[in-house]
Length: 463
Picture 1 (tube, rainbow, N blue to C red):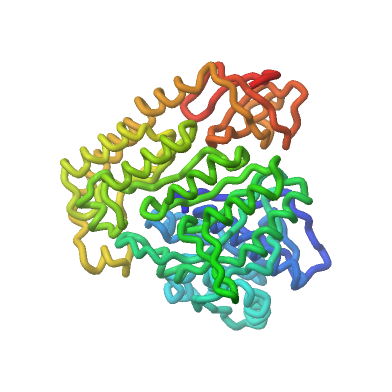
Picture 2 (cartoon, rainbow, N blue to C red):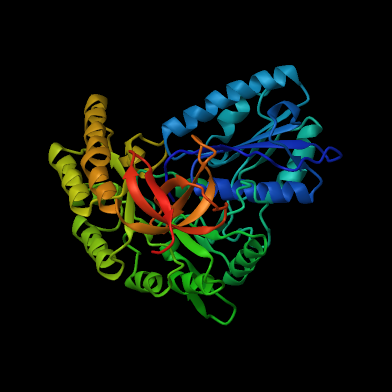
């Protein structure tokens, strides 16, 4: 998954004043967490609870959490201090921590008995109604058991982000990769794929609801591997094709790919169907083979470059984005320079860039020493940010100016109600005067300028 931090407070939701109670959900982390919050909302609504966007009228506050980095957890602790104030104003309110941080820090979260009433891990959301009623009775609601089977495949998520254009569809849960720095396998459990029939059903429901784009989600979508009762298997490339063939007007995206598992078969499937978007998020983490081995990433610098060459050959118009960690254990200036030179060689369209922060109980925390000085980490992070947002960003933007792209209109620009915004197949945001276009339309936009994060265009009649 993209491991950058996002936050989302869901808005514009139907309220059910005669319900068991009103639930306010706040979500942090990757797209999988946002998808999980929609599953949670579906489970709660089916059991008589309402969903609200107003924290002041909530009877229950749920914060869906991320543990991928220390900063992510620190933000949650800060939010819990805010929720403490809500509890002082309304002592009957229930506070629940769900998701990855609940799995990792269950005991610590429950230490403050006056604040957190509910601690629920990612595989226990079906138990939320029972646990909430226990908490209403004064008991602590706790379930952080991980599952080898749970995929929530029978649940139709409540679409909390009401743009009505794009939606996430989870195709698998968990992770088997065991990267030495990563907590995901410990907080989300082992990898398990979802029945493709239920995925197709969910996509059909979205189309019937007017959605124009889906993003297939997994910690490592390339390792999706469903086996039915007859022993017949469905690979990710086959699933991608099944979804693309449902409706040629439905855009299909996916996240995240793992370099060691990204096959030519997936790339050729993308090339066969115009409605599969030409964007691949391919986290590299480091440009040094030595560091990649210490990270247990399962590929070398050369293998990663081979995958990029395959993308450029099979999908010449595709954009490539990535994740990069600086300052991992024992990283030298030579290792850092190899990351910089790889960035220049690939020419990423965008990158999520971080300093390494040791996560407790990971293999890196147990077996390696976090020995890169904090000042050096900061300096190296600054260097990769300056490279990506400077030279590489300029190259990417300049290559797009003068070209026309099909854009799916997603909403009204924050800066002007006379402008709309949408994304290209390459996942680049374009802002343009709205003319007669509406949210959900496909338009062709010619790029006439660019800011640091956005392409500026105008609608044109032809590609």
